[in-house]
Every structure is written in structure tokens, then in C-alpha cells.
Length: 67
Image (cartoon, rainbow, N blue to C red):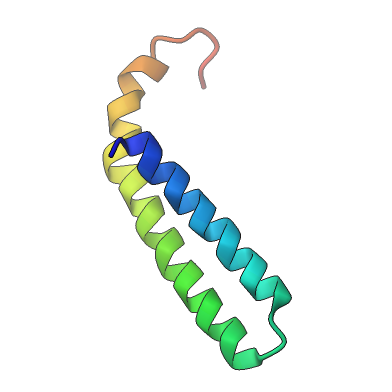
């Protein structure tokens, strides 16, 4: 599985959890879904910072107009 596939899978899962949160009436379920979303986003963000960003940074620094 490629890094792109993993990122897309994470984003799809986050979208699903947001939908579950919005559609839930049970506070316990909302807390459960939010807890899972929080854990997933935290791991996803760390992976991006530690793996993805360093891998693409050399290419980004070569583009005109970067900040």
C-alpha cells in the first residue's frame, strides 16, 4: 500500500467518524467516536510530520514562491 493510499484511507475514516458524531444522539457514542477520531488524527499528524513532510520538503524548497 502506498503512502497516498494510507493517507486517503485515514481521511476517509475521519470523514466517517465525523458523520457518526453528527448523527449520534447518545452522548456515550459521541464520546467514543470522538475519542477514536482524536487518536487517529494524532497518529496521522505525527506520521505526516515525521515521514511525509521530510520526504517532500526537498521538492517543496525547489518550487518558486514557497514560504
